[in-house]
Length: 148
Image (cartoon, rainbow, N blue to C red):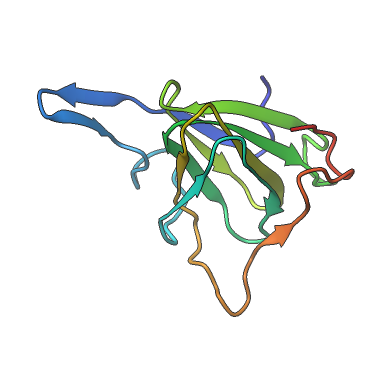
């Protein structure tokens, strides 16, 4: 699948031992790393869609820690090398990925299966409560050619 301009994907690997598992999600020496803003966890119950939104400044780094999610990106940027391109990723316990989502790219996810999805985000900027860098459209927006 051709990736939207600015999107990057890192396959994650679990390192198991007799005590459990460890997975490195994002390191400052990773080629995918830009800068650190904060880390937060968001969850979604089975079948729930959290979409669409984008940011003007921050890039997001999504990794699903529990469950499976369909993560969808849409390039609505007119001056991009990939305008109108959609990327769809199935990520989570059975396919651990880190997905870098650049500014101005619409994104969202749907919780698949019968478990609550736990998704960690390591955005490049801390959340600004007084002036949030977050812009939203509903999941069924006609501006994005995608049906969840």
